[in-house]
Amino acid sequence: MSGLYARESRSVSKMAHLRFFPQAIVGGNGAYVTGDDGRQLLDFAASWGAASLGHAHPAVRDAVNRALSDQAGASYLSAANEACVLLAEKLLSLVPERARGRVWFGHSGSDANETVARMVVTATGRPRIIAFDGAYHGGTVGSMAVSGHPAQQGTRAKGLTLVPYPNSYVAGSPEAAKDAALAHLERLFATEVPPEEVAAFFIEPIQSDGGMLVPPEGFLEAVEALCRRHSILLVSDEVKVGLGRSGRFNAFEHAGIEPDIVVFGKGLGGGLPISAVVGPEPILNHAVAFSLQTVHGNPVCAAAALAVLETIERDHLIENAERTGHALGDALRGLAERHALIGDVRGRGLALGVELVTDRTTREPAARQTALTVFRAFQLGLVLYYVGVRSNVLEFTPPLTLTQGQALEGAAILNQALADVVAGRV
Ligand code: PLP
Image (tube, rainbow, N blue to C red):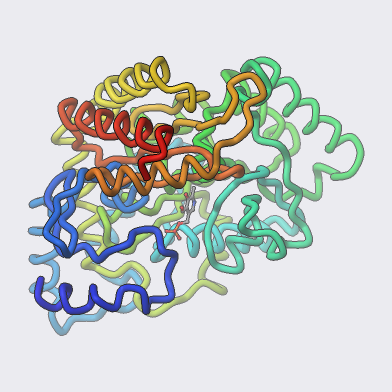
Protein backbone atom coordinates (compact mmCIF):
# COMPACT_ATOMS: atom_id res chain seq x y z
CA MET A 1 0.00 0.00 0.00
CA SER A 2 2.62 2.52 1.04
CA GLY A 3 4.69 1.60 -2.04
CA LEU A 4 1.81 2.51 -4.29
CA TYR A 5 1.35 5.84 -2.55
CA ALA A 6 5.07 6.53 -2.68
CA ARG A 7 5.07 6.00 -6.45
CA GLU A 8 2.02 8.20 -6.95
CA SER A 9 3.39 10.94 -4.77
CA ARG A 10 6.02 11.79 -7.39
CA SER A 11 3.25 12.92 -9.69
CA VAL A 12 1.15 14.67 -7.03
CA SER A 13 1.37 17.85 -9.11
CA LYS A 14 -0.50 16.09 -11.93
CA MET A 15 -3.69 16.00 -9.90
CA ALA A 16 -6.35 18.57 -10.66
CA HIS A 17 -6.84 19.48 -7.03
CA LEU A 18 -6.19 22.48 -4.88
CA ARG A 19 -2.51 22.49 -3.97
CA PHE A 20 -3.32 22.65 -0.32
CA PHE A 21 -0.76 20.13 0.74
CA PRO A 22 2.49 19.85 -1.19
CA GLN A 23 3.13 16.17 -0.79
CA ALA A 24 1.36 12.84 -0.66
CA ILE A 25 0.44 11.41 2.71
CA VAL A 26 1.49 7.80 3.09
CA GLY A 27 0.17 7.11 6.56
CA GLY A 28 -1.43 8.46 9.67
CA ASN A 29 -1.82 7.66 13.32
CA GLY A 30 -3.97 9.60 15.75
CA ALA A 31 -3.20 13.29 15.41
CA TYR A 32 -0.18 12.70 13.17
CA VAL A 33 0.26 12.09 9.46
CA THR A 34 3.33 10.80 7.64
CA GLY A 35 4.46 12.45 4.42
CA ASP A 36 6.09 10.57 1.55
CA ASP A 37 9.48 11.80 2.76
CA GLY A 38 8.89 9.90 6.00
CA ARG A 39 8.35 13.01 8.10
CA GLN A 40 5.68 12.97 10.80
CA LEU A 41 3.50 16.05 11.01
CA LEU A 42 1.07 17.06 13.71
CA ASP A 43 -2.28 17.47 11.98
CA PHE A 44 -4.27 20.48 13.16
CA ALA A 45 -6.42 20.36 10.05
CA ALA A 46 -7.60 16.74 10.29
CA SER A 47 -8.46 16.74 6.61
CA TRP A 48 -10.55 19.91 6.96
CA GLY A 49 -12.29 18.36 9.94
CA ALA A 50 -13.17 15.06 8.28
CA ALA A 51 -10.76 12.93 10.31
CA SER A 52 -12.79 13.60 13.44
CA LEU A 53 -11.30 10.71 15.44
CA GLY A 54 -7.82 11.23 14.03
CA HIS A 55 -6.06 8.89 11.64
CA ALA A 56 -6.35 5.12 11.59
CA HIS A 57 -8.64 5.01 14.61
CA PRO A 58 -9.14 1.34 15.51
CA ALA A 59 -12.91 1.75 15.94
CA VAL A 60 -13.32 3.07 12.39
CA ARG A 61 -10.84 0.59 10.93
CA ASP A 62 -12.56 -2.40 12.58
CA ALA A 63 -16.05 -1.20 11.59
CA VAL A 64 -14.95 -0.72 7.99
CA ASN A 65 -13.22 -4.10 7.81
CA ARG A 66 -16.27 -5.83 9.28
CA ALA A 67 -18.67 -4.03 6.97
CA LEU A 68 -16.55 -4.81 3.92
CA SER A 69 -16.49 -8.52 4.63
CA ASP A 70 -20.18 -8.68 5.69
CA GLN A 71 -21.29 -6.76 2.63
CA ALA A 72 -19.11 -8.56 0.08
CA GLY A 73 -21.36 -9.24 -2.89
CA ALA A 74 -24.41 -7.70 -1.20
CA SER A 75 -26.31 -4.71 -2.51
CA TYR A 76 -24.80 -1.28 -2.25
CA LEU A 77 -27.99 0.23 -3.56
CA SER A 78 -29.09 3.56 -2.12
CA ALA A 79 -29.15 3.25 1.68
CA ALA A 80 -30.99 -0.09 1.66
CA ASN A 81 -28.84 -1.58 4.37
CA GLU A 82 -28.95 -2.18 8.11
CA ALA A 83 -26.11 0.18 8.96
CA CYS A 84 -28.06 3.08 7.43
CA VAL A 85 -31.19 2.16 9.34
CA LEU A 86 -29.25 2.16 12.61
CA LEU A 87 -27.44 5.36 11.69
CA ALA A 88 -30.70 7.10 10.78
CA GLU A 89 -32.19 6.13 14.16
CA LYS A 90 -29.11 7.40 15.95
CA LEU A 91 -29.03 10.72 14.10
CA LEU A 92 -32.74 11.28 14.69
CA SER A 93 -32.10 10.95 18.43
CA LEU A 94 -29.41 13.65 18.25
CA VAL A 95 -31.43 16.49 16.71
CA PRO A 96 -34.23 18.63 18.16
CA GLU A 97 -37.77 17.26 18.21
CA ARG A 98 -38.92 19.43 15.30
CA ALA A 99 -36.24 17.92 13.00
CA ARG A 100 -37.07 14.31 13.96
CA GLY A 101 -38.69 13.11 10.76
CA ARG A 102 -36.53 11.41 8.20
CA VAL A 103 -32.91 11.11 7.20
CA TRP A 104 -31.37 11.38 3.74
CA PHE A 105 -27.83 10.13 3.19
CA GLY A 106 -25.34 11.59 0.73
CA HIS A 107 -21.60 11.51 0.09
CA SER A 108 -20.51 15.01 1.07
CA GLY A 109 -21.55 18.24 2.71
CA SER A 110 -22.03 19.64 -0.78
CA ASP A 111 -24.59 17.10 -1.99
CA ALA A 112 -26.39 17.29 1.35
CA ASN A 113 -26.79 21.09 1.20
CA GLU A 114 -27.71 20.91 -2.46
CA THR A 115 -30.43 18.42 -1.62
CA VAL A 116 -31.74 20.68 1.15
CA ALA A 117 -31.80 23.68 -1.19
CA ARG A 118 -33.87 21.79 -3.73
CA MET A 119 -36.17 20.16 -1.17
CA VAL A 120 -37.11 23.31 0.72
CA VAL A 121 -38.09 25.21 -2.41
CA THR A 122 -40.08 22.29 -3.82
CA ALA A 123 -41.74 21.42 -0.53
CA THR A 124 -42.80 24.92 0.46
CA GLY A 125 -43.49 26.37 -2.99
CA ARG A 126 -41.53 29.45 -1.85
CA PRO A 127 -38.84 30.50 -4.33
CA ARG A 128 -36.33 32.28 -2.08
CA ILE A 129 -33.51 31.23 0.23
CA ILE A 130 -31.49 33.33 2.64
CA ALA A 131 -27.87 32.57 3.49
CA PHE A 132 -24.92 34.52 4.85
CA ASP A 133 -22.22 36.46 3.11
CA GLY A 134 -19.08 34.34 3.46
CA ALA A 135 -21.05 31.10 3.93
CA TYR A 136 -19.51 27.99 2.42
CA HIS A 137 -22.13 25.30 1.90
CA GLY A 138 -20.30 23.27 -0.73
CA GLY A 139 -18.61 22.96 -4.07
CA THR A 140 -21.32 21.49 -6.31
CA VAL A 141 -23.43 23.78 -8.46
CA GLY A 142 -26.50 23.40 -6.24
CA SER A 143 -24.66 23.98 -2.97
CA MET A 144 -22.66 26.90 -4.38
CA ALA A 145 -26.02 28.34 -5.44
CA VAL A 146 -26.85 28.92 -1.75
CA SER A 147 -23.35 29.92 -0.63
CA GLY A 148 -21.89 33.37 -0.03
CA HIS A 149 -18.15 32.72 -0.01
CA PRO A 150 -16.18 34.95 -2.43
CA ALA A 151 -14.91 31.80 -4.17
CA GLN A 152 -18.46 31.10 -5.29
CA GLN A 153 -19.41 34.29 -7.03
CA GLY A 154 -21.20 33.71 -10.29
CA THR A 155 -22.83 30.49 -9.22
CA ARG A 156 -25.51 31.85 -6.92
CA ALA A 157 -29.17 31.02 -7.36
CA LYS A 158 -31.49 33.77 -8.58
CA GLY A 159 -33.67 33.36 -5.49
CA LEU A 160 -30.73 33.64 -3.07
CA THR A 161 -30.36 36.65 -0.80
CA LEU A 162 -27.13 36.98 1.16
CA VAL A 163 -27.10 38.80 4.48
CA PRO A 164 -24.12 39.85 6.62
CA TYR A 165 -22.80 37.38 9.20
CA PRO A 166 -21.95 39.38 12.32
CA ASN A 167 -18.20 39.86 12.59
CA SER A 168 -17.46 41.00 16.15
CA TYR A 169 -13.78 41.62 15.44
CA VAL A 170 -14.32 43.88 12.44
CA ALA A 171 -17.35 45.61 14.01
CA GLY A 172 -15.41 46.35 17.20
CA SER A 173 -17.76 44.50 19.58
CA PRO A 174 -20.26 41.61 19.56
CA GLU A 175 -23.13 44.00 20.31
CA ALA A 176 -22.29 46.30 17.40
CA ALA A 177 -21.94 43.31 15.06
CA LYS A 178 -25.22 41.79 16.20
CA ASP A 179 -27.20 45.03 16.00
CA ALA A 180 -25.97 45.83 12.48
CA ALA A 181 -26.68 42.32 11.17
CA LEU A 182 -30.17 42.22 12.70
CA ALA A 183 -31.02 45.72 11.48
CA HIS A 184 -30.03 44.62 7.98
CA LEU A 185 -32.32 41.60 8.21
CA GLU A 186 -35.30 43.61 9.48
CA ARG A 187 -34.78 46.17 6.72
CA LEU A 188 -34.53 43.45 4.09
CA PHE A 189 -37.81 41.84 5.12
CA ALA A 190 -39.51 45.22 5.24
CA THR A 191 -38.34 46.20 1.75
CA GLU A 192 -36.72 43.87 -0.81
CA VAL A 193 -37.57 40.34 0.30
CA PRO A 194 -41.15 39.42 1.19
CA PRO A 195 -40.66 36.90 4.02
CA GLU A 196 -43.62 34.81 2.84
CA GLU A 197 -41.55 34.02 -0.28
CA VAL A 198 -38.62 32.64 1.70
CA ALA A 199 -38.43 28.86 1.97
CA ALA A 200 -35.37 28.55 4.21
CA PHE A 201 -32.62 30.34 6.05
CA PHE A 202 -29.27 28.52 5.95
CA ILE A 203 -26.97 29.14 8.90
CA GLU A 204 -23.52 28.02 9.94
CA PRO A 205 -23.61 28.12 13.75
CA ILE A 206 -19.94 29.14 13.52
CA GLN A 207 -19.01 30.51 10.11
CA SER A 208 -15.91 28.46 9.46
CA ASP A 209 -14.67 29.01 5.90
CA GLY A 210 -15.80 32.63 6.17
CA GLY A 211 -13.22 33.16 8.96
CA MET A 212 -14.19 31.03 11.99
CA LEU A 213 -16.67 33.65 13.14
CA VAL A 214 -18.55 32.95 16.35
CA PRO A 215 -21.95 34.67 16.32
CA PRO A 216 -22.60 37.14 19.17
CA GLU A 217 -24.85 36.00 21.97
CA GLY A 218 -28.49 36.43 21.03
CA PHE A 219 -27.92 36.62 17.27
CA LEU A 220 -28.93 33.11 16.22
CA GLU A 221 -31.79 33.27 18.71
CA ALA A 222 -33.06 36.39 16.90
CA VAL A 223 -32.68 34.67 13.52
CA GLU A 224 -34.66 31.72 14.84
CA ALA A 225 -37.41 34.06 16.08
CA LEU A 226 -37.61 35.72 12.65
CA CYS A 227 -37.86 32.33 10.97
CA ARG A 228 -40.65 31.23 13.30
CA ARG A 229 -42.55 34.48 12.79
CA HIS A 230 -42.54 34.01 9.02
CA SER A 231 -42.69 30.18 8.88
CA ILE A 232 -39.24 30.03 7.30
CA LEU A 233 -37.36 26.74 7.68
CA LEU A 234 -34.17 27.12 9.69
CA VAL A 235 -31.34 24.95 8.31
CA SER A 236 -28.23 24.41 10.41
CA ASP A 237 -25.16 23.39 8.41
CA GLU A 238 -23.19 21.38 10.96
CA VAL A 239 -20.85 19.94 8.34
CA LYS A 240 -17.62 21.39 9.73
CA VAL A 241 -18.31 22.38 13.31
CA GLY A 242 -20.96 19.83 14.33
CA LEU A 243 -20.62 16.32 15.77
CA GLY A 244 -18.90 17.43 18.94
CA ARG A 245 -16.23 19.71 17.50
CA SER A 246 -17.58 22.89 19.13
CA GLY A 247 -17.83 21.33 22.58
CA ARG A 248 -21.53 20.44 22.10
CA PHE A 249 -22.84 17.67 19.89
CA ASN A 250 -24.57 20.20 17.62
CA ALA A 251 -22.95 23.62 17.37
CA PHE A 252 -26.37 25.31 17.28
CA GLU A 253 -26.91 24.12 20.87
CA HIS A 254 -24.65 26.94 22.11
CA ALA A 255 -27.44 29.34 21.11
CA GLY A 256 -30.21 27.11 22.43
CA ILE A 257 -31.98 27.21 19.06
CA GLU A 258 -33.87 24.39 17.37
CA PRO A 259 -33.38 24.20 13.60
CA ASP A 260 -35.91 22.42 11.40
CA ILE A 261 -33.23 20.76 9.29
CA VAL A 262 -29.76 19.66 10.35
CA VAL A 263 -26.98 18.85 7.87
CA PHE A 264 -24.07 16.58 8.82
CA GLY A 265 -20.96 15.68 6.82
CA LYS A 266 -17.17 15.66 7.05
CA GLY A 267 -16.45 14.13 10.49
CA LEU A 268 -19.51 11.87 10.30
CA GLY A 269 -17.60 9.17 8.42
CA GLY A 270 -14.33 9.84 10.23
CA GLY A 271 -12.84 10.43 6.76
CA LEU A 272 -15.10 8.17 4.72
CA PRO A 273 -17.56 9.91 2.41
CA ILE A 274 -20.96 10.12 4.03
CA SER A 275 -23.30 13.01 4.82
CA ALA A 276 -26.80 13.22 6.23
CA VAL A 277 -29.76 15.57 6.18
CA VAL A 278 -32.18 15.21 9.09
CA GLY A 279 -35.52 16.98 9.01
CA PRO A 280 -39.32 16.85 8.98
CA GLU A 281 -40.99 14.13 6.93
CA PRO A 282 -43.02 16.46 4.66
CA ILE A 283 -39.80 18.15 3.57
CA LEU A 284 -37.52 15.13 3.41
CA ASN A 285 -40.05 13.16 1.36
CA HIS A 286 -39.21 15.46 -1.54
CA ALA A 287 -35.65 14.12 -1.64
CA VAL A 288 -36.68 10.94 -3.44
CA ALA A 289 -37.97 12.90 -6.42
CA PHE A 290 -34.58 14.18 -7.46
CA SER A 291 -31.84 12.98 -5.23
CA LEU A 292 -31.24 9.39 -6.13
CA GLN A 293 -27.61 8.41 -6.55
CA THR A 294 -26.48 4.81 -6.76
CA VAL A 295 -24.27 4.32 -3.73
CA HIS A 296 -25.83 6.88 -1.38
CA GLY A 297 -25.87 5.50 2.12
CA ASN A 298 -23.02 3.13 1.40
CA PRO A 299 -23.02 0.47 4.16
CA VAL A 300 -19.26 0.66 4.69
CA CYS A 301 -19.39 4.43 5.19
CA ALA A 302 -22.49 4.10 7.38
CA ALA A 303 -20.69 1.53 9.55
CA ALA A 304 -17.80 3.97 9.92
CA ALA A 305 -20.25 6.71 10.92
CA LEU A 306 -21.84 4.49 13.56
CA ALA A 307 -18.37 3.75 14.95
CA VAL A 308 -17.56 7.48 14.98
CA LEU A 309 -20.73 8.36 16.91
CA GLU A 310 -20.22 5.49 19.38
CA THR A 311 -16.60 6.50 19.97
CA ILE A 312 -17.50 10.16 20.49
CA GLU A 313 -19.88 9.04 23.23
CA ARG A 314 -17.77 6.29 24.77
CA ASP A 315 -14.54 8.30 24.89
CA HIS A 316 -16.24 11.56 25.96
CA LEU A 317 -14.79 13.36 22.96
CA ILE A 318 -17.21 16.27 23.17
CA GLU A 319 -15.87 17.01 26.63
CA ASN A 320 -12.35 16.57 25.28
CA ALA A 321 -13.05 19.04 22.47
CA GLU A 322 -14.25 21.56 25.05
CA ARG A 323 -11.34 20.99 27.45
CA THR A 324 -8.54 20.69 24.90
CA GLY A 325 -10.06 23.53 22.92
CA HIS A 326 -9.68 25.73 26.00
CA ALA A 327 -6.04 24.71 26.38
CA LEU A 328 -5.34 25.37 22.70
CA GLY A 329 -7.26 28.67 22.80
CA ASP A 330 -5.25 29.78 25.85
CA ALA A 331 -1.99 28.85 24.14
CA LEU A 332 -3.01 30.79 21.01
CA ARG A 333 -3.98 33.81 23.11
CA GLY A 334 -0.54 33.51 24.70
CA LEU A 335 0.99 33.73 21.22
CA ALA A 336 -1.04 36.89 20.59
CA GLU A 337 0.91 38.55 23.41
CA ARG A 338 4.15 37.79 21.57
CA HIS A 339 3.17 38.36 17.94
CA ALA A 340 1.70 41.66 16.79
CA LEU A 341 0.59 39.83 13.64
CA ILE A 342 -2.20 38.16 15.62
CA GLY A 343 -5.26 40.39 15.65
CA ASP A 344 -7.82 38.01 17.10
CA VAL A 345 -8.18 34.49 18.52
CA ARG A 346 -11.67 33.01 18.47
CA GLY A 347 -13.74 29.88 18.16
CA ARG A 348 -15.37 27.19 20.24
CA GLY A 349 -14.02 23.83 21.34
CA LEU A 350 -11.72 22.47 18.68
CA ALA A 351 -12.99 24.85 16.01
CA LEU A 352 -10.61 27.77 16.41
CA GLY A 353 -9.34 30.61 14.28
CA VAL A 354 -6.49 33.09 14.49
CA GLU A 355 -6.86 36.23 12.39
CA LEU A 356 -3.59 37.74 11.18
CA VAL A 357 -3.41 41.48 10.53
CA THR A 358 -0.66 43.88 9.53
CA ASP A 359 -2.01 46.52 11.89
CA ARG A 360 -4.07 45.87 15.00
CA THR A 361 -5.74 49.29 14.84
CA THR A 362 -6.88 49.20 11.24
CA ARG A 363 -7.21 45.39 11.19
CA GLU A 364 -5.64 45.26 7.71
CA PRO A 365 -5.58 41.60 6.66
CA ALA A 366 -2.17 39.94 6.52
CA ALA A 367 -3.07 37.48 3.76
CA ARG A 368 0.46 36.94 2.47
CA GLN A 369 1.83 36.32 5.96
CA THR A 370 -1.04 33.90 6.61
CA ALA A 371 -0.16 31.76 3.60
CA LEU A 372 3.53 31.92 4.54
CA THR A 373 2.74 30.87 8.11
CA VAL A 374 0.84 27.81 6.87
CA PHE A 375 3.79 26.89 4.67
CA ARG A 376 6.40 27.49 7.37
CA ALA A 377 4.35 25.49 9.88
CA PHE A 378 4.27 22.64 7.37
CA GLN A 379 8.07 22.81 7.05
CA LEU A 380 8.36 22.75 10.84
CA GLY A 381 5.98 19.80 11.24
CA LEU A 382 2.48 21.19 11.71
CA VAL A 383 -0.42 20.88 9.25
CA LEU A 384 -2.64 23.96 9.23
CA TYR A 385 -4.77 25.71 6.71
CA TYR A 386 -6.33 29.09 6.32
CA VAL A 387 -9.79 30.44 5.64
CA GLY A 388 -11.69 33.72 5.71
CA VAL A 389 -13.19 36.04 3.14
CA ARG A 390 -9.93 38.00 3.40
CA SER A 391 -7.78 34.79 3.40
CA ASN A 392 -6.13 35.80 6.67
CA VAL A 393 -7.49 33.41 9.28
CA LEU A 394 -5.52 30.36 10.38
CA GLU A 395 -8.02 27.59 11.00
CA PHE A 396 -7.65 24.85 13.61
CA THR A 397 -9.85 21.77 13.27
CA PRO A 398 -7.70 19.03 14.81
CA PRO A 399 -9.02 15.55 15.64
CA LEU A 400 -11.41 15.46 18.60
CA THR A 401 -8.95 13.07 20.22
CA LEU A 402 -6.27 15.77 20.47
CA THR A 403 -4.44 15.78 23.80
CA GLN A 404 -3.44 18.87 25.74
CA GLY A 405 0.21 17.94 25.15
CA GLN A 406 -0.38 17.90 21.39
CA ALA A 407 -2.23 21.22 21.61
CA LEU A 408 0.83 22.78 23.24
CA GLU A 409 3.21 21.07 20.80
CA GLY A 410 1.29 22.58 17.87
CA ALA A 411 1.17 26.03 19.49
CA ALA A 412 4.95 25.92 19.97
CA ILE A 413 5.48 25.12 16.28
CA LEU A 414 3.13 27.93 15.32
CA ASN A 415 5.07 30.30 17.58
CA GLN A 416 8.24 29.45 15.65
CA ALA A 417 6.48 29.69 12.28
CA LEU A 418 5.16 33.18 13.07
CA ALA A 419 8.58 34.32 14.27
CA ASP A 420 10.17 32.98 11.06
CA VAL A 421 7.61 34.71 8.85
CA VAL A 422 8.11 38.04 10.59
CA ALA A 423 11.90 37.64 10.40
CA GLY A 424 11.72 36.74 6.69
CA ARG A 425 13.12 33.26 7.26
CA VAL A 426 10.68 31.69 4.83
N1 PLP B 1 -20.69 23.05 4.70
C1 PLP B 1 -19.68 23.56 5.40
C2 PLP B 1 -19.96 24.40 6.61
C3 PLP B 1 -18.35 23.31 5.02
O1 PLP B 1 -17.33 23.82 5.74
C4 PLP B 1 -18.12 22.51 3.89
C5 PLP B 1 -16.74 22.24 3.43
O2 PLP B 1 -15.80 22.83 3.82
C6 PLP B 1 -19.22 21.99 3.19
C7 PLP B 1 -20.50 22.28 3.63
C8 PLP B 1 -19.02 21.13 1.98
O3 PLP B 1 -18.65 19.86 2.38
P1 PLP B 1 -17.86 18.89 1.39
O4 PLP B 1 -16.55 19.51 1.11
O5 PLP B 1 -17.78 17.59 2.13
O6 PLP B 1 -18.68 18.74 0.16
